[in-house]
Length: 269
Image: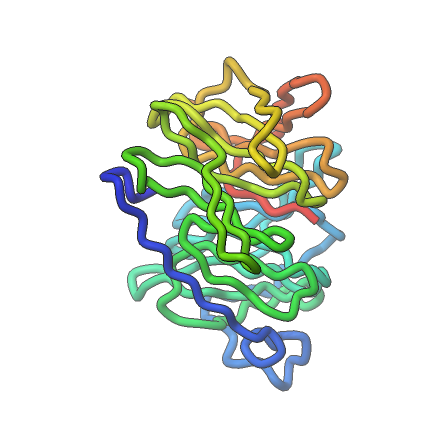
């Protein structure tokens, strides 16, 4: 993650999905990406993640019961930051190669990959009703507020910004790096990573910054990509291992960490 020197540039664009993200009707789609596939979502995968695929990376569907991952698209130079649309009709992700990264969509029914917006290299998020999409840098939407990481006070900390009042509240305050804020499905809790550059731990707090709890004490990681389970009881965490990035399932009640398999930056619906 960039911005360690004490400044964080936030680039935000709101796009009406009714006009910018129309991939349900094959006749209305823009041209299918050359790296698109006909592999499709062979099963109703609820978790889609990025994994190494030989000549590049690709999106895979993960069966959480047996840990098996099935490749969903053809490899490209980079494919990651996958996010399910609220209606489950598509997964949007960042993908590309030597010509640059673009925002793309994987149609859940047909398996086709479509380029949506060229030149987009930052993670995206949907509004809960799916009507708009935020293109963000270190920024995440949740309820009536957003949380973001900023180095405005000398090192990265987590802040909450109320969209209605414009008030900004600092939620963390320590000498380490506080990064990767992620709202729970209910919007009442925030997961984030805290610690050194490659020695962070997963923490959870209430949305107002109270009741901070450390969930991991032995897993070391850099970019965490914490992803909540739909019921808000578990978090998928990206951990650095000797064999590359891997996913661990963290139980909020017991703090138990269960290895899932290789992968990074999952999305769960």
